[in-house]
Image (cartoon, rainbow, N blue to C red):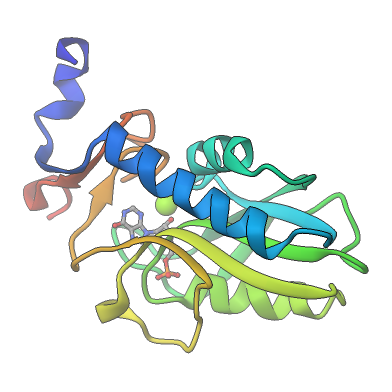
Amino acid sequence: MLENREMLQDIEDVLFTERQIAVMVERIGKEISRDYQGKNLLLISVLKGSVVFMADLMRSITIPARIDFMAVSSYGSGVKTSGVVKINMDLKIPLEGYDVVVVEDILDSGKTLHYLMELLQGRGPNSIRVCTLFDKPERRETDVQASYVGSQIPDAFIVGYGLDYAEKYRNLPFVGILKPEVYA
Ligand code: IMP
Ligand code: MG
């Protein structure tokens, strides 16, 4: 951990340790394995934030699953999403016949997922649901619902385990609350 000093000095508190995250991911993997038994499961990871979660989650799923990736960015700098979503990389797989689970890092205002769900729904999958590691329900501005949630969290800006601020801190193995003065 000492090698992380440069990033650690920007962290106010550890919100979830590696161990706590592993327990949440394992639980979600079990839920998905149970619910999608006999179905045609396709996991769609929304890059870049969900890359670490996806890598762990797919290995905790015990039924056959395909994976694909989509890269999006929402305009708006700093810690807020504008709702205008740009597709930087699209899926390689047509969605017809698949039972899709969209894997997200965090559900905040819900604007990003609201846009994505409309887009993906329009491509005619069998079914589509949302799986998010973290959820900030207080901040919701749309009606997006997640079927699988690792943990609800309070309204704070968190980083690590894939989550960034200005592309930094994604490689921290735990999830921490970023000191407000870092983004103020
Ligand atoms: P929404 O569109 O407002 O729901 O924002 C979703 C996206 O904003 C996530 O996929 C993240 O990229 C980013 N985001 C929201 N809250 C946080 C946070 O606390 N830490 C890091 N990124 C966040
Ligand atoms: Mg981000």
